[in-house]
Length: 229
Image 1 (cartoon, rainbow, N blue to C red):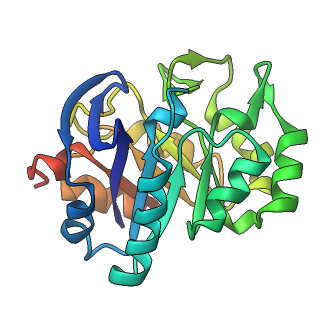
Image 2: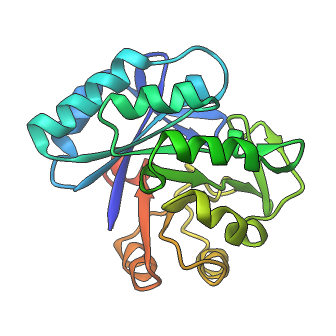
């Protein structure tokens, strides 16, 4: 299944290359809901919150509301969810699932204490853990800091705390150079949990291959540039 992405920065929907260089920006964020209305799920990621540069709370709340009421879309929200209070707040906005990344780790290890508290506050079925990787290692804090953990090794330990994993290949994010299918096969073998794959995806054949592997595909740049083929 293809899942379109709306990444928010400075009140606009943006697409970044490798999570750093802005390639394009769309001011009409709500117009994207109309463009993506045929898809059952939508990803909304607050990049400002993820990078500790403020937030786009009003936009996120309204996107959740309109996606549900106007288009019957389910919404998965992430970016800067690092406290139990913040997780509960975003869940209350109508997000079907929340994405937790940096807070799942502390001092280079799995933050079990936080995850246990989180699952007591938010139903585990509404939690997705982001395992974004740069050169094979997990990267956190808006892809600005790497830790010495590999996703395929920690997935089994994280399974009790989430409904699935969002796995972004930061090396290919925004490049449209094609999904690293070998890498995603390695991740698929590490867990039975659902996986949403992201990074470099540009063809429907890749999306179909990922679907056969049991993965959804989060797609950004190829959709924004209308070159998904």
